[in-house]
Length: 128
Image (cartoon, rainbow, N blue to C red; front, side, top):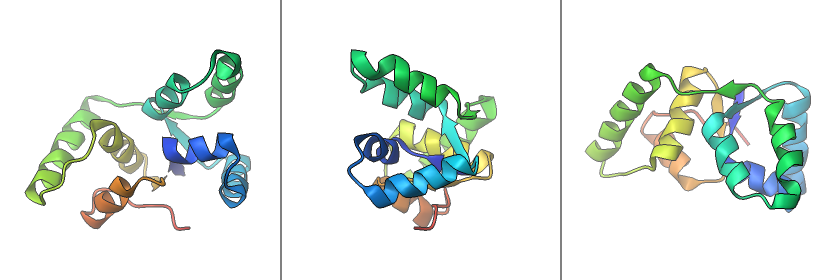
């Protein structure tokens, strides 16, 4: 499974990167996409009134990853790891990353913070 970050979805919906769109379409057809609820909410907050219902219905078709009490404990440990290395991550990115780890999934993101998380052993990124 692949947890697809908001940054990838934005490019996908804008159709600005055809190779990215083709790869995400491949993963979708193979039922390999896991959608953290926080990513879904980030996408929805950026939509226009015109696109909201259509995109929400589309996203509703994907299996969701949701935080549990255990997730918040893992995030707190990840925050400590970052602090120990002089790095601070957003709670949103950490939630996405930890949900991926808990789901035994890789993360696909265009955000550099996830590369830093991978260097610290917090997540595993999708290979290009």
